[in-house]
Length: 115
Image (cartoon, rainbow, N blue to C red; front, side, top):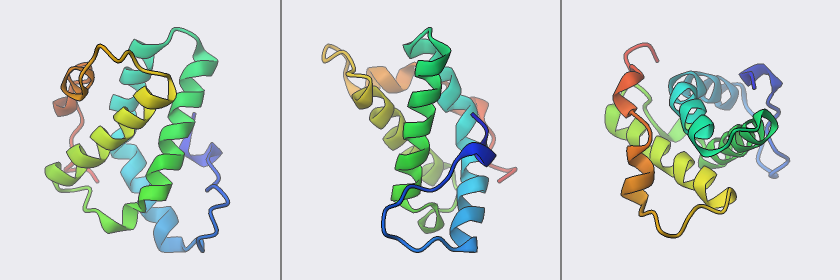
């Protein structure tokens, strides 16, 4: 799923240029690891797209203008929130702890310097 395919959900919030730009920049940083996580979770391509779309909606609802995506701590926090959301939407195995779910994705493979 490309960022250009995403339309912000009708959440009642005003869509601003700043919000759209922040969303695009943050999605570039987060997308590779979220794609890897979706591949680990499901085999079906359509299901992966659904999980990524849900992550996009969650990111939009979190308001990416509030975070600095050049800061590793902010990126890690948002990535964890999105991964846990994807896990919950898919009906994640209750036998896994949040730390075990996070360990499935290598966070260091995505540079935040380019954001």
